[in-house]
Length: 74
Image: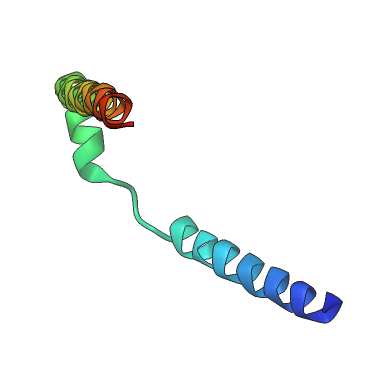
């Protein structure tokens, strides 16, 4: 049992840590540098924040509705 857990741990560690070497060899992101230089990165960040807040609000509202339906049915 102990050797199975040890093998599983080593396998998962290898799978998690193996992509790190590929990230270290990736070239610089020229598009991000261009957006940052022109000040458009703030627009991108703002749009992403708006999308995230919208999805979070939708999920919160959906959770409230489901809780209300569960309370009424139960």
